Structure formats: C-alpha cells, structure tokens
Length: 622
Image (cartoon, rainbow, N blue to C red; front, side, top):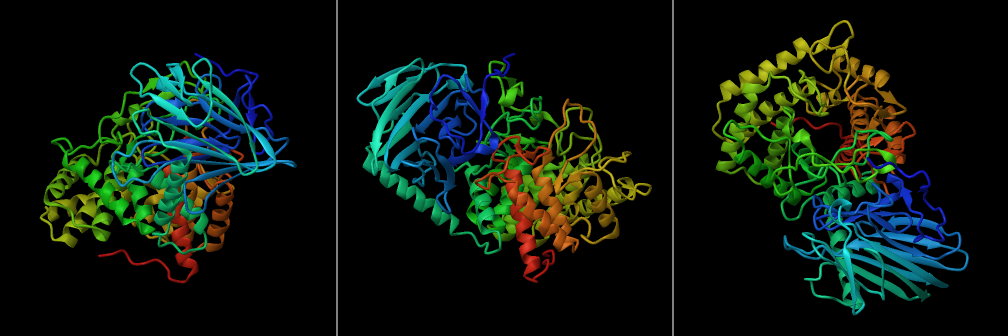
C-alpha cells in the first residue's frame, strides 16, 4: 500500500507559491477549496488555483484529477500567476457557482474565473471546464500545468499537441482536449508559461474533441450566459431571512449535487476524503442515497425550488414503482438509478493525509437500513402536498413499499450510520418506519387514494407503542439509541423534527439535555460515543450539529440555539462550504461538499428565522 511522502507541504490559504509547477507537489486541505459544476459533475478548485479533483464526464465517473487524494500521482490542473508574496482571496460571483480566485501583490495582480459551462436546457449537455485568467495590474507570467490521470489515476494518458490544442487519450477512456495556449508536451501532461500585461487574459477550455472548437470570444459569451443562468436560479428562492448568504450558498451546493439528466441527488461530491485523519473511515458518497436525497428535496422545497422536487419525486417514484416484488428498496442507487459499484480499494493512491485505503463504490448498498422508507415516504408526501398528484402506477409502487415496512419494521438493521457489524434494533430505524406508515396514511387520505387504512393504522400505532415501551430508559431518563442499550445517538434529534414527539415534551427535553451533555462539544455534535467497530475516532457530524440547533429552537431555547448556530456558520470554510464532519478544532473532514450538512443548515435557519419573526411553528398539515 502506498504511503504519504514525508516531504509534502500542506498548502494554507493565502500562502505565497512562487513556483507552483515545481516537482515538489503539495497536499491541499479540504477546506482550502471551492466547488464548481454543471449538474453533471463537479470540480474542486484550491486556493492556489489548482483543480485537484474532477470526475469526468459525470460525478460518478472515474476521476481525471485526484491530486487531493495523492498529490504525486492523482492528477492535477494548475494555473499559477508568478506574483511576489500575494494575498490570495477566493469568492463566488454572487448568487452563482462561478468561482473567482484573486492574487494581489504589491506590483501586480491577477484574477482567475473557474466554471463549468451550463447554458443548455437539454439532458445531454457536454461537460466543458473553462478557466480564464485576467491580469488586472502589472505584468504577470501565468504558469500552466495540466496532468490528467485517467481511471482513478490508473492510466497515464498519451499526449498530442496540434494547432494550439493538447489531446489526451487513454484506452477505454473519453479523450480530452485542452485549448487556449501554446503547450509544451511532457510525460502524460502539458505545460505553458504565458506573460500577460494588465487587461490581457488567458482562456483555457477542457472538453472532449467531439465538440466544436470555440474561440475566446464565444467562450466569453458562454461565461456570461452561465452566470445569468445561475443568478436566475438563485432568484427563485423564497427565503428572505437573516442568513441569506449561507442559505443561498447551501441551496447552490444542493443544486450542484443534482443530476440534470436524471433528477437524482448525490450525497456528496467526492469519494474517500477521510472522516478521521490518517484512518480507514474513507467512503465513496457519489451516489443517490434515498435518505440524503429525500432530506435534500425537503430543504429545496422550503426555499421554493419545486421543479427540483418534481424531478426528484419522479426519479424516486420510479424506484418505488420498480422495487422488488416484496417492495424492498436499495439503500442507495447510482445517479442514473442503476446499481452502485462494488466497493474497491485503490491501493496505488496514498490517500488524503495518508488516510488509506482509498475506496470507490460502497458495500453499504447491500445493508438493510429500514429508516430509508421513512425519508422516502416523507419526501413523496411533501412532493404531493406542494406539487403534482401521484400517478396510479406510482401509488401502487408506494403501497408495495409500505406493505414491506409493515412486514419488516420489527427487524434489526444497520441503521442510519451504516454500522458494519451485527444488525441491531435502532431507535432511528423504528422512528422512520413510523414516519413511513404515518405519511402513507396521510397521503392516501389527502388524495383520496385506495389504501388498507385499518391495517396501516394498526402498524403505525404498534411502532409508536414499541418506541415508547422499549426505547425509553427510566434509569437514564432519556431515550436510547437501540433496544436494551443505555447509549445516546444524535439521530434521536430527528424525533421532534418528524413530529413523533412534541418539541417540549418532558421526556424529549430530558433526552435533549442528555445529548447536550454527552454528545456535544462547543456546539459540535457527535453521532455517538460508543465503539463502532472501526479504528480511530471520527469527528463531530456537521448535520447533527444543525439538527441540535433546530431542536433547541423548537424547545424554546432561542438564545442558545442562535448562539450555537452562529458558531457553526463560522466553522464553514471561506466560501461557506461544509464537509461531512468537523475535527476537534472544527476543521472540515470527510467528503466535500456534503449535502446532508447544507440541507440541515437550511432547515435550522428557516425555523430560527420564523421564531424570531414571531410567526412560530405552523401546525402539522391535515
């Protein structure tokens, strides 16, 4: 297994880099990145102008740049202006996913615009990466190095240079074309150094050679069109609260994780960024989890994005309609609705900070996770409440799924945290089975759909009684995460959020206090503190931290909720982006950007705003 090289220097934001294309490679912190995309894939852009993560042409395709996972071998696309001791500032053009990186020195300055062109209404829009560097003061030499490594860095491409373009090819991989400069050929890579004066610019485009080659003026028009398209999308948001920047950025992240072609939503943009430094908690999150996707759609609907909800609902309804004869669903699906690849270790990659093995695919797809049916049914219910009515065939699929829940809710499972060990009776799984039954009953009643109401209501009540009878610990005076245990779990925070228990019920308040005492650290909430069978200590789970804030607000503890919420906002990176977890110093860890975190932020902000405006919680709809 490859090991991290000891001579690597980790880049910090704003660190001067006079020789960005030297042989000494750099590891870049997760937090030192922005994200761009085109609703097909995403790229991570570091503060030094390097793209060190990109899967091509789709989010779940093999990577062509994975330098964040192995600075020496993963592949990278670097643009670096030669400016002495610059201050580096990174920002988004407001209300867009178009990223600016600025280098400001005493004698010169330059600005890099990074984006993926997104101007097409069609499902088959090509993936086109554009990088435009403009010198805004003085004279600057721009250093370029493009070193793609196909198939998760298992293939070094052949390179041909012709008529100002570089062509990268490898067997069984999509060819790539880089245009816009006079390149010099290297071993599987190209270089260029271009001197520009103030007002001059360098425009590079990475695309596939089957697409028409376009000039810099046409690219400029496409850049403007893409900016306008993002701004028009952002303008559809109905959120007018106090935290519009953070909420708007979260919505833009959730949109980036959405597949234009399929309507599905990825859990995160990356694979194998570690939850614990140097450890083995490295998973691939580039799939559509039923759970994560359903929560994401709820967040988008709250912000007024009903088109995305409708598209996802159709994708989700197809999963229910085509479930097994017994009504069972997979925990996750590929973005096109197909099978998630078998988990594989890429032992040729060193891993972020030496965290190995680097994994692609995810074997959790084969687990039994009963909670997914609650998230699915809640999403379908809300989509019907705010959108189009469910079709007859999709309702039959839903009935088949709900009947599966009615038969299997008492079984042990792997739970929301996908524990890789013996199945257990998890409170959260029971809770979401109750949600599944409850929302199915509500939907059938609301839409006057045919349903076995007597049988479903009986099951719903049985699950309700089971939770109160078997998951409340009189001695500990709080709910427990599994039957027969005395342990806490942050997934309990969803109990009042899904309206199983009142937010001010004395038993719930006792549980909330226990979570605050045992699972929180300065507002950061850990999923659990028990042994989960894996070595190393993971960080605090970002989404749980926002759930905790919302629970505090719903319990009437508004000052405490707002104080912690403001802390959590400061724990984001410089672009208001979050990964899956925080380490003990609130630094970002895990896959990035993480949809779960951003959707939980939206929910917390939405509720706190409503409370502060004096509107209070709305009654649960009939």
